[in-house]
Amino acid sequence: MRILVPFDTANPNTRLSSVLSSAERSEFAAAMCHDVCAAIRAAGHTPELLATADVAVDVPVTVDDRPLSTAVNAALSDRSLPLAVVMSDLPLVTAESIQRLCASAVDVVLAPGLGGGTNAFVTQAPEFFVDYHDGSYRKHLTIADEQGLSVETVDSFRLAVDIDDPGDLAEVLLHSEGRAATWLHNAGFALVHRDGRATAVRK
Amino acid sequence: MRILVPFDTANPNTRLSSVLSSAERSEFAAAMCHDVCAAIRAAGHTPELLATADVAVDVPVTVDDRPLSTAVNAALSDRSLPLAVVMSDLPLVTAESIQRLCASAVDVVLAPGLGGGTNAFVTQAPEFFVDYHDGSYRKHLTIADEQGLSVETVDSFRLAVDIDDPGDLAEVLLHSEGRAATWLHNAGFALVHRDGRATAVRK
Image: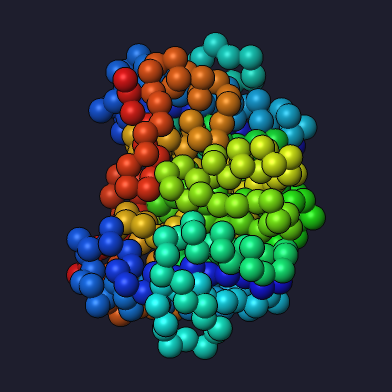
């Protein structure tokens, strides 16, 4: 299956600004995106970047600088189905979690993210469309329901953890040995335990 | 399978103190524990509370007021295996996620929690023991490895989300319709979307 990976080349991961410079955020975003594409390939699928500008990577790139929902909906109507969309800030994903996402025969499979977003989905139905603004997981359930589509949710920690803010970085160090984890190690991040939860602290 | 659910009757969920009074935290903790026991029953297993003091609930209760790791290790050596331990602050768990936890035939199955903890495990091996202090998920991997035990991790969002601090409450409202979610609704909590993540705000 072709799997689109939206990628913001302009100013990625702004909520990491308190711990990473702009150049570092770009490097880290590229490392996360690499890990996602590697997991997609290892699962036997074909990653394709849907990027806001051209970017030098070893996967096919479609450039669309419109807002995320517009660009994804345009891609959904242009391409043959089934089609999956997996966010680029999911460095915990593995081949197995991608396979679980893609294993179902229902019309729409959703992978919720922490905080109510939609970190990944697969659709077999041309009627389905996305709306990523505020609480998209519930919106996508509603859209599928209103179109009379069958829908399933994949219960995956690895698909749920998107790296949005500094509190999320610990999960990368805890559960990945990919390029994003290596980047964090090399940038001086290490795990510290506080109040029973691990935090990634820069030394 | 018998599934132990550790439950702190004394001062549960202290990190919710900024949004819930002591009495409210006790009520909310009981509601979460009810949801966990209901999911265990729906999965065809038998919940048993491992509580720090006696508590009036409709499941068997073993009282042990020692620290969590000590009490769980005592229970592991007292009881016949396989035995599972599932934390009581996991109101998102469903029968299906409990079944996935219990489906494997390996020696030890671990369900990591956000922040490096161990939210649930199953052991078939008498050599296995727990150490819940700081970063227990990695510690439990090491313990299993040092004992030469086969180990698997269950990749479940519903088992990973433990309700520790106010930032976690949104997940209950987003993904559960159980007693804990109803308690939050009745206490005036509602979802608000900020910076792309949902937050539970009390009105």
